[in-house]
Image 1 (cartoon, helix red, strand yellow):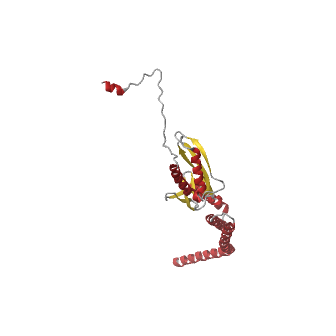
Image 2 (cartoon, helix red, strand yellow):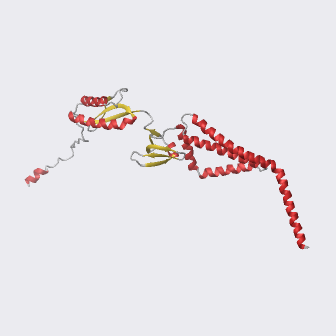
Length: 298
């Protein structure tokens, strides 16, 4: 009898559970079907909107591929989050609390990754405004080198002596950037000191001929020479000219070498630093003893 009663209780419980499952299935059948449809449509829409965003940004001039890819992923994940919240709402879940929880989680993540988010924001600004591009030589607050890659978190450079440099984007964005490769033309001033007794006009003429004779030096603006300063031991004669940015250093080295050779050939000196010292004997200062005379007298 006890066994039969227990069996009846189990059957009754199973039948009640099955009835609840049937009631749940009937009650939420449309919700489940709607949730499945929303998920499928959401994934498709997220992919389509991400591709549209990337294609639309690609039609804009100057938008970097890294920035296009990053923004398209943001659109995709934003659509998927919206779909997830909508699916939960289908089953009567209070989405307001979920949104508040997501906001709190986002705030906590933002505070924990504050430096990283600053680098991402700076990377987006660098990619959008383009103060420098790959292949250009820059100097930003002492961080100098040729740009090899601009990422969302950091920028990779190679210094002039071949050293690899990885700089956080926030460091580059918060500094004044000097881009030596952006402009096609650059001006160069070469100042050379000559002796005060040398012929200044001849020195200027020689420097001007060197600049005018180099095919890499632009004719417009025309090269010019002038006396830039009167130093302690030399007269500073300067030659100023314009050239292509790619020829800047080569022309500077060649003209500097040729100027030394031309000055030597024409008797123009390049003096070493020197200083004249005059001893003034005061009235109350006794004259110096002639030590050589004392030594010979002894």
